[in-house]
Amino acid sequence: MGEKRPRLVVTFYTTAGAIATEQLCRRLGLEGKLISVPRRITSDCGMAWSAPPALRETLESRLREAGIETAGFYELPL
Image (cartoon, rainbow, N blue to C red; front, side):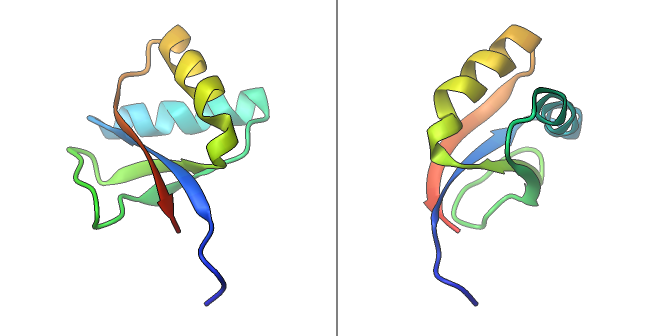
């Protein structure tokens, strides 16, 4: 395995929120991908969005504007 790098992990209450985030980010050209929620954190939904930490403010505002509810934002080495 390669060296772990810091990643922004966004968790959701529902799978629908996770999928909506993927669709929104693809439409906006924002880097990231769906992942399984890391064991270090808990979430009602087993899926999370992983992105570069530099996108945190952009993601927070875009998700809020789109009405996508998030459970949390975490920065973790992945």
